[in-house]
Length: 416
Image (cartoon, rainbow, N blue to C red; front, side, top):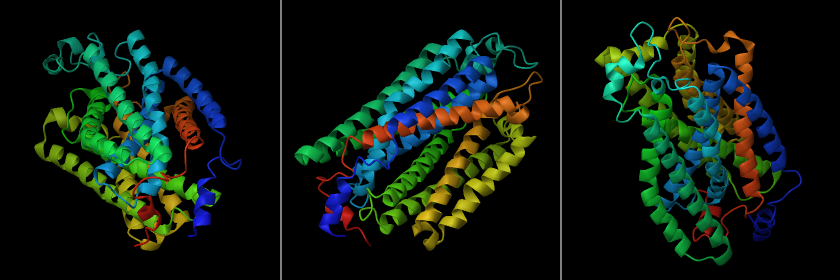
C-alpha cells in the first residue's frame, strides 16, 4: 500500500456515497415511536422493547469490551479497526435514555415487566409475590430503589469509560502525545473490571430478574459472550463496508479480517461452552427452582427455537468459520456476521419472551398475533437506527484511523 493511497483514504471521512446520519435518526425515531405504542398498549410490546434495547446495548458494550481489551494488551494489529469500535461507543450515553420508557412504564404499572415489583401480583396458584418466601429472601437486592440505582450506575460507568477512551484517542490524532496511550491503558485496567461487573449486574437484573425464582451464576458470562459476538459481527460488517465504499480500502486488509473472524470463531465456541455448561449443571442438579426455567423453554414453539439456537447459533457458525477461505472473503464474512446478529436476536428472544406468562401461567406465544410481530420489528428498527445515527455522526467528525497512535504503522503493515 502506497503512502499516497493511505493519505487519500484517511481523508475520505466525509463522502456523499456514505449514509447520512440524519436519515438513520429519522428511521430510528419512527421505529421507536411505533415501538413505544406497543410498550404502552400491551405487555408483549414492553417485552419486545426490552429485547430491542438489550440487543443494541449488547453491541455497544461489546465494542467497549473490544476497545478495553485492545488497550490492556497494547495490541498492534487492531489499531486500524479500533477507531470504528470507538465510533460505535458514541451511542453508549443514549442507552440510558432508551431505558427511560421502561422505567416510566414500571412506575405506571408495577409488575408489567419485572413481576417482583408488584407485591400483589399472582404467582398462578402459589399466592402473591409479597407472600413468596423466595422473594422475601431476595428483597435486599430486589427492591425498586436499589434496582434503578444499579441501572444508573451501569449506564453511568459505561458512559464514563466510553467518553474517556474516545477523548484520549481523538485528542491523540491532534497532538500525537504518547500520554494518551498510557492513560487509555490505565483506564482499561480498571474499566475491564467495572464493565464486566456492571454488565453481569445488568444480565441479572434485566433478564434473570424477569423470573426472579431462577438463578444461574453463569448468566453474566453468557451475556458477555453474546455481547462480544454481536460487536465482532458488527465490526466486520462495518470494516468490509468501508473497504467496499473506499475509506478503508488499502488500509483494512485480509489479515485484519482474518483476525476479527478468528475472534468471532473463538467466541462462538465460548458461547456454546457457557450455554451448555449452564444447561448441564442445572439439569444435573435437578433443583425445581432452577429446572423450571428450562422446562418452560422446552414446550411449544420455544423448543424449536432452542434447537434452532443449538444448530444456528453454534454448529453452523462453528463449521463455517473453521474454513480459512470463508473467513477471509468479504462476501462470506458479511454473510456469517449477518447470520450471527440474526441468531443473537433469537437468543435474546429465547431468554426473555417466555418469562411473560398468559392467564394460565404458560409462556406467552410471541407470534400469536401479527401485531406482536410489528412491535418486535419496530423496536429493532428503532434502536438500530439510533445506533447507526450515532456511529455515522461520530464517523464524520474524526479520522478514519488513529493516525498518530504509536502502533499505527505496525497495524497498517499487519500481514502475517
